[in-house]
Image (cartoon, rainbow, N blue to C red; front, side, top):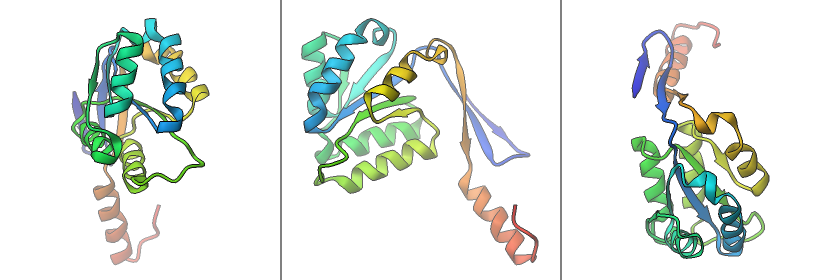
Amino acid sequence: MEQNNTQNDFTIVRMDKQKRIALVAHDSRKQDIINWVTVNKEKLTKHFLCGTGTTAKLLAAATELPITAFNSGPLGGDQQIGSRIVEGNIDFMIFFWDPLASQPHDPDVKALLRIAALYDIPVATNQSTADFLLTSPLMDQEYNRKIIDYTKRIHNRTKAFDNNEPMA
């Protein structure tokens, strides 16, 4: 449920109790995410799960959880997840990435993380953050995300600049 706030430069989007969670992992971290999902299987059964191709297929096989698989990351899976974040169809992302390995699709990864930040979704890029997020009391309740309207902010800054007003 979107709700525009006409006096401010943000939109409130409600995240339901049942979260739509994207699961993503680079090749060197796939076993780590399989282990993490296996340990947290009971909690994750309460939510809708999806993921990039190979990760989703490996997770589904290892845990028997229903996981919607998109394309592999290098074949557009990161972009598919990003588009679903923009559409409001993904609320949360667990992305076990390898910070030491260069990936052929690094620009896609950066774009995915940027979209997640723009649309104010929780993102865990390592196990401890994933543990903290999954055990948060907010996981079992509705939550209102505050999505900043950057177009409006840029317009307001430009208007202030044009009028020689101090910028906030």
